[in-house]
Length: 495
Image (tube, rainbow, N blue to C red):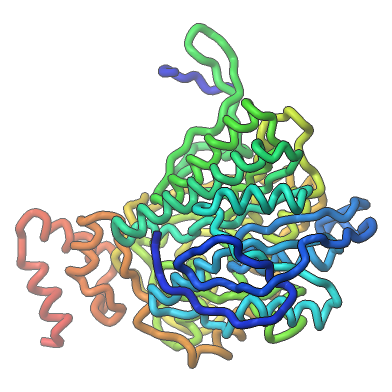
C-alpha cells in the first residue's frame, strides 16, 4: 500500500579495576576515568566453522571476529556470551558507563553483578572460551576506535554502546545532553571509523520500536520502510516517519538517518534492529555460573516495566501503573535479543543494499494487562498513579516481525514459564532493593512534574481514588478549583 505525502559527559569517577587478567587490553591515552592498564595480545585465533540450529541463531556459517560495543551492559553481556558459545571470536568494547550511572543514581543492579574482569574469568572457566576486553569510549576516543578497527579487522560490529533509558534521558538538561552527545557521537564515530579504515564490516545496531512512536497507527507497523507517492506522482520507498517520545528515542531516530546516509554514500553494510522492551534477566549462558549473572534494573529510570512490576510484587507492595495503563508496548525476552543479534550477523545485507531493518519483537501487551498478569500470579494489588511521561493514555500497536520469524526465530512469550524465573530472582535478591528508587523521579516536562509532585507519587498517597477521579482533580486544579484538591489533601492526611 502506498501513502500519499502532501509535503516532501557525564563525568563521574569510575570503579578502578585491578586485574592481571589477560582479557584486558591496554589503554594508550590519558582519560579522567580510571581504566585497566594491563597488557594483552590483540591477535586472536579464529575458530573453525559453526553448526547450529536456526533457533540458536546461526545455521552452517563460519566463525566471525565480532566487536561488541557496550558488551558489559544489560543486553550486551548475554549477547557476548551467546556469540562466544557459538564459537565466534568476541571482543567486548566498553567504557563501563552503565556502572558509573549506578553511582550517579545511587542504585545498583538488584542482582550482584561482578566486575568485567571477574565476569570474563568466570566465562573462561565454565566454557573454555576466551573473550577479550578493551576499555574505550566510542563517543570520545575516535583515534583509539579507528586503531582498534584496523588492528582487529572485525567481520561484524554489534553496537550497544548507547545510553538506553528513556526516563534517564529526560531527567534534566545534563542527562539530555549526555544522551545525545554519547549516542549520536558514538554512532557517527563508528561509521566514520569504518569508512576511514577501508574495512568491509557489517554493523548490527540495537535500535528501538520507539522510533515509530506510540500513537495508534491505524494499521500494521512495517519493518522500517514504507512505499509512498510523492507530489508529482513519483513513487519512493522511504524510512517510516519518526515520532520519538523522549530524547533517548530521538537519538535512535538520528542514528537511522546516519545509517541511511553512510549506506548511500559509502555503501556500508548495516542492520538496524528496532527492538521492543526487554524483559527477563538470565539466559542459558548467564545461568552457568553465579558470577555470570546479568543485570536486573528495577529503578524508575532503568527498570523496564515488567521487571519493575516483578520487583514490587517481591516486596509485597502494590504494582504502580502509570496513568490508565492503556499504553501498548512491544516486548522481547533477553534470550531472544541474543538470538536475534546472531541471526542478523549471519544474514548481512548485500554490498550496496539499503539498510536492513528488523522489528525485533515477540509480542505486544497493554501495561494494565501486564499488571493484572503479575497481580494474578502474585496476589499483589494494582495502583494507578500519575504518569510522569508525556504520552498517549491509550494506544494500539500492531507490529510486523516476519523477517526474524522467516529466519527461524521462535520467540519466547510470557506464557512460556520463564516469568517464574524472573519472579524467583526478584524474590531472592529483594534484600538488595532500595524501595525509594522504584517510584518515578524523572519527568517529561514541567507540567508532568507539577502534577506528579502535587500528588506525592506515593502509592499510599492515592488512597482509594481511581485514575479517572485523579485526572478530574488535576483538571479542577488547572482551572483553579481547589475544592477537590482539598478533599484529596484530607485523604492524604488521614482526616
